[in-house]
Image 1: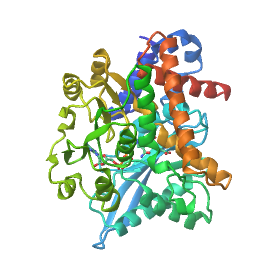
Image 2 (image 1 turned 180 degrees about the vertical axis):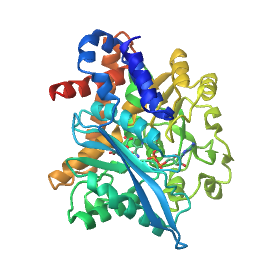
Image 3 (image 1 turned 30 degrees about the vertical axis):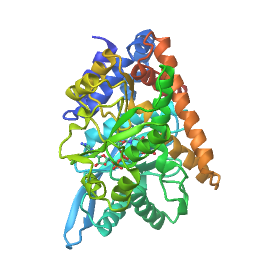
Length: 443
Ligand SMILES: NC(=O)C1=CN([C@@H]2O[C@H](COP(=O)(O)OP(=O)(O)OC[C@H]3O[C@@H](n4cnc5c(N)ncnc54)[C@H](O)[C@@H]3O)[C@@H](O)[C@H]2O)C=CC1
Ligand SMILES: O=C(O)CCC(=O)C(=O)O
């Protein structure tokens, strides 16, 4: 059995019933074959892969809070501090009913490579809870966030572990979490990113993941003789990543015709009115179907069929495994030329392989959505120097970082004979940086 196959089996055996974690590890390890085969003897001696797939620690805790009816509710909180070879642990917090250790571990594992690709000093982590924010009052959200931070604060710090947002965690939640951290520790410091501009947030962090996705996708299109000009774009989700991906797509000359949420999708042939979506999602915390109240000419489908909408470029920006083989076949049949992942692992492995076989350009999430965490690292820099940079300064740096990630992924793919396979390129480029740091620091 090869070293890689041994480790794949080990991960399944040691982490039973965690299919998302297995999926993320298997996909990465399989693409690393050429590097691992070249260095197998000393990687085995140093147990490099065994160390890479075993988190430094997984913290799990009870979160008890009181709902509006006076009933005590109990959720489970998690933080996986996966690997800090490159810098302090860094990665978001997800609030969603399906969060459990397998989701947190898959996200934390992906985050190691993503953060390495940014070139900035940040290690990999992720966390969250099975709390479902849908339909909760503002007071309930605050009560939950305070209870969550009352335990998490013991394990984090600006040079230890710096959480941020992910699904269900935006500026409002980061504010409540930060307030509780400050109350408990008596310290005003850069312990979270994605903060409001009024207390240490960075300009352009809100836009960063979506804008960064478009900077990466644009670099990929241009390298292949294409561009966003006059292209039809379909984007899943309508949260932070999707909204700002749509905004930048419009600025690059494309027309976004569809967006979704977990209940269904809207299709607007004239191009989605983003101001309306922002009003519904960022202010009212409403559902995407409400778009029809403002634009009755648009169509709404209460299903997950968004990938049947014809497009030139597809940007999955909602959640893991939301684009499967059947969806990929529909995209190809409709002439889709490129898929770029704004979400983490949104495309199933079979769908990814099918798209690549069909010569659809494919940008993997851990490279293409790294703009959010990259600007989070820039927020940490601003907090450390007690400075606030302009929007343009942060946005320029973001663009440079994303173009650099594309160049690194492209170069690594070519170096190992996989030109144009950005999945292989991104995994190898991220792996090389993490392994170099781990080896320099000994066991
Ligand atoms: N916020 C960030 O900076 C970053 C987020 N990501 C990833 O991007 C994805 C989206 O995150 P955010 O936009 O931050 O979260 P969000 O909570 O702001 O938005 C998530 C959106 O996806 C929709 N959604 C969830 N499940 C769905 C489904 N099965 N089908 C269709 N829509 C669905 C929700 O209704 C919501 O509109 C996640 O995979 C996250 O891990 C990746 C990098 C950074
Ligand atoms: O900004 C951050 O630290 C985390 C972003 C994140 O969770 C992600 O890249 O998936």
